[in-house]
Amino acid sequence: MIDYWSYYHTRLIDAALMHLQLVTISLVAALIIAMLVIFTCINKDKWLSGLIYFFSALYSVPSYAFFALLIPLTGLGTTTAIIVLTLYSEYVLLRTFSTGIRQIDPLIIESARGMGMTDRQVFFKIQLPLSSKSIFSGIRLALTSIIGIATIAATINAGGLGTILFDGLRTQSIETIIWGAVLTIILCIFSNVVLRLIEKITLRNLELGD
Amino acid sequence: MSNSAVKFKNVEKKFAAETIIEKLSFEVEDGEFITILGSSGSGKTTTLKMINRLVEPDGGTIEVNGQSIEQIDLIELRRNIGYVVQQIGLFPHLTIEKNIATVPELLGWDKEKILVRVKELMELVKLPYEQYGKRHPKQLSGGQQQRVGVARALAANPQIMLLDEPFGAVDAITRKELQKQIKSIHKELSGKTFLFVTHDINEAFYLGDKVMIMNNGEISQYDTPKNIVTNPKTDFVKELLDTIYEEEALWRELK
Image 1: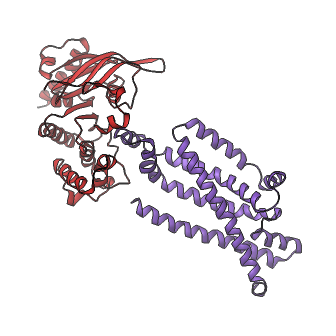
Image 2: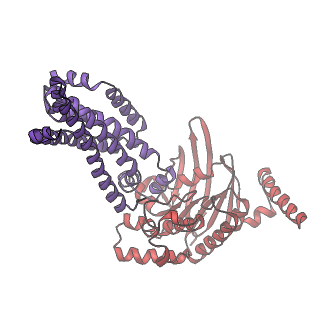
Image 3: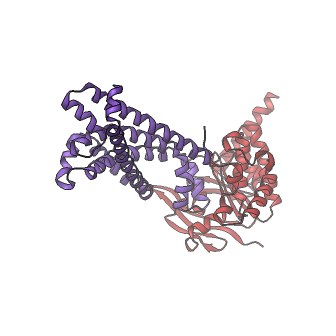
């Protein structure tokens, strides 16, 4: 095990970084889209529900098939991987964000409106801060799930830790498989810890800390 | 100065096929404390919410300070009317100070002016700034939160205050205390018009310069408490008063 690390650590670290990059780009893209969708659809419940159903349908497509389906359109490589990962996280984000916003006591929203806040002000001053806890848990959930799914992206040449895992499978090298798996897990834990920190700081600034 | 602060003319409101309010007309004079009394479903809350356009009427006209509310910018209109809802509606993520400062901040007052105003209002509702300013709503009792709600609605010095069963969720003793306070606040800030929705008869008659009794979306009687008691106009009002007399009899018996 340790020998394997000393021989191949550059390759392993590169793969892990590539993995992190894939996941981060997808998550940020999904986050921006989710914010735009929620902002525009917040008072159009039917649209929002429709969109969530649409993304839930996409979410149910197996990742392997999804990658394959997109190859004719966007080819092999990172672009396809990022599109798929973004769509997967979109569902998780939209679902948790909308739940978080719908859970806010309607009387709070009503008094904000009654005091003369515009829809924009209600969104940024009231709805967003009050749903920030579920927003953060949604982000963490999305991140964890796409870190796993991203390993499959190696099959379409997108790089990442999946390359190590599939190499191990092909060469029947237990050591390689274990290193690939361990690094995926470490990546997951590490990124969750980082997100936790960001969450804590943000909530403290919003004075919502527990 | 007997201009009308609020004026309803043949106002109608339907929800789906059901008519909630039918041809409602009344006038509220500047500086009056009006209580709107009715059971649930009588249309009292709907009436109140039509004034700041949280509910849009289906017909008729509503005037605020002599101007049709449709001609006033919606946001402008709301910022000039204080609004207190059932069970508080304070923003849980903001401190008491920030809650009270909401409308002045929306109006873009400078920081010092806001701070002075917040302190003044917290004085008025008897929650000293030094002690309560930095707390969050959940750290206050129900009665205290309700007082913050009133202070918040008064922040930008609105001429009209709408209060929708503000004391519905507090215990009897606190409620009495709050009623006394709101009455003295109204007296202290002379010239402000209060419209106060409640389903509590005692509250309505204690607070109101005039009481508007609503039943099934119509006004049963709209007069001073004294006139209503000495001269109840409809069966509904008589029935309502009877419940009070019965209660009174009960208490007398128990003594």
